[in-house]
Length: 110
Image (cartoon, rainbow, N blue to C red):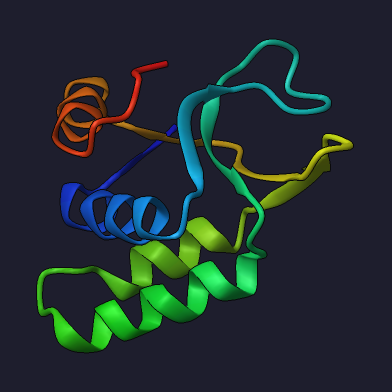
């Protein structure tokens, strides 16, 4: 299991909350057999998320572009009928960091 680096997680939270996307650290996709991972869902598509992350990468020396590329290289997609969830098997945020960011951004913790 890979842990999402704090700086990368902060960038994802900022972009997601600015665009109305939802984040969870407990998604279990098809063929995961109950294993949980990080996910992003909402009305946007992954290209929008990635493009905004690339802008953040250019503006910050703290974001690890290689780790984000590895994470996004593992992405899978489920269509929920009401939208799409992008999930990252094998990737989780540190639970304390995830909960701290949820509180900071006013998101109900999952």
